[in-house]
Length: 94
Image (cartoon, rainbow, N blue to C red; front, side, top):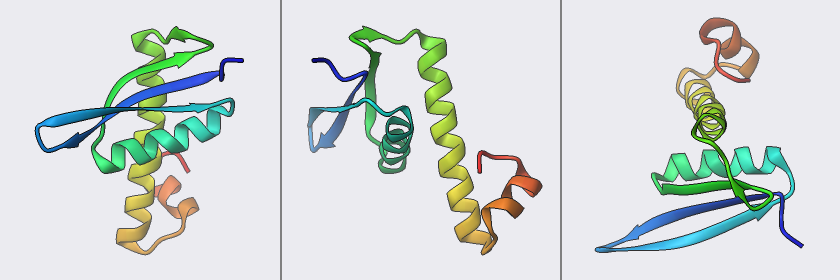
């Protein structure tokens, strides 16, 4: 049985890029994983849903959401504020 979501990403190990895979049925878990990928600077190769690669607009939407979550976390940590205040002041995803 195929997982609903499948993410292909690459880690740079010197000159070679090692392609890895992440699979999950939970869209929230996929967003959290994309936050991890963005935070560590890994290269995204593909995001698939039920075996079919997402369109550019759909994958961009997932990446944009993950980037908003990451930005919100960094703002909260840097400014020492709660997520609610961050959302009110800056408007990123809480």
